[in-house]
Length: 290
Image (tube, rainbow, N blue to C red):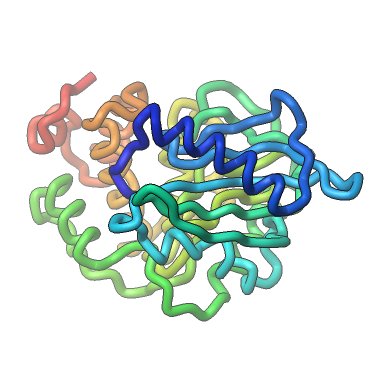
């Protein structure tokens, strides 16, 4: 994701553009129902159109920093058959004051995200049907042919060198289409719907499952459930590799101040995967050990 963060002026303009987009789509905003996205670069809200409840989302970025892959992700994901996701109903794209805006009108999902944060901070009860729905969606994504790229080999190289000190072969043998940002704030319950398809594309096989498990480490029973249900993607050389890559990505985010409470269990998982003390790994990557 881009590291640019909107200023207060940009955020004010984003709110203005949300109102403009609502008018453009013929929507009436529902008071008080708003959701600010990652680093304030998106604003979503519940709206009504001809008596039907919808979701309107507006994203902003400097015109010279727009990633077309991310910009078009939700729209291109409509081609994925069999995955539970909102249906995109309309798009508007425009530029103003050296900023580019994109408005997307989608079907409204009644169920709330499993967590308000990407990491799972408290216990959850997820039904058998929920897990089956997740498995069905991930299989549908993986079966999708695409030339979009979510994860590049050079990033895998850097992260695995960083965390393992060159002890793990970084060359990915199997690439599959993936959601690309599978965490608990992008999953709903009691029905399992996947939000935020901006970054979907090719990634190491098992990437979505490895990331979700890493985001679950504060709730060991949920992490164990993922391991049991998706063991085929998390075992063997490829499973070890993709899990280490997920751990490295989240540790890198932690070094920038994101979800620091995950650092100790992530280091413990790295220790298990590398058969090396967590303290040694922490020193190598420049992070405090538990």
